[in-house]
Image (tube, rainbow, N blue to C red; front, top):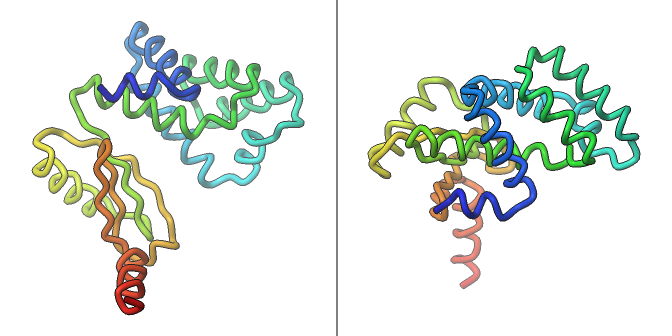
Length: 183
C-alpha cells in the first residue's frame, strides 16, 4: 500500500500527522486547499522559498514569518498551526515533500489515485480535464493530478502514477534519438 511508503519518510510522517488532524477535524479539503496556496507561494515567491530553506533563521523568527505568510494566504487554522510546528522543528525545508505526501493521502482517502504531472508549460483547464479523463481510463478510477512545470522538458509531459512513469517529453525523445544515432 502506498501510504506505508509515505509513512517511512520524515516528510511522510509529518504529512500523515497533518492528515490525521484534518481527518479528525473533518477539514481534509480545507487543509488541502490551504496547502495548494502554500505550494503556489513556494513556486512564485523567492522570499518564501528562502524562508523555508534558511538554516540560519532562528526558530522563533521562522515561526513568526510563517504565521505572517499563513495569515496573508488566508490559510485554515490547522495548516497555520502545522506550519508553525514545522518552523519550530526546523523542518520547513520538507514543506514541498509534505504537501505532495498529504495530497496523496487525501486522494487515497477519496478513493483516487494521484498522478504527478510535469509539463514544459502550464496546462490549461481543458488540458488538465482531458489528461484526467485519459488517466482515469488508463487506471480505471478517479485520478487527482499534482501539476508542476519544468521548462527543460521542452514539450510533452512526464506522468508518474505510483511506480509507473510515462515520459513523452521532447527532451527524452531527443536524448533517445541522439543515443540511437551514436549506436
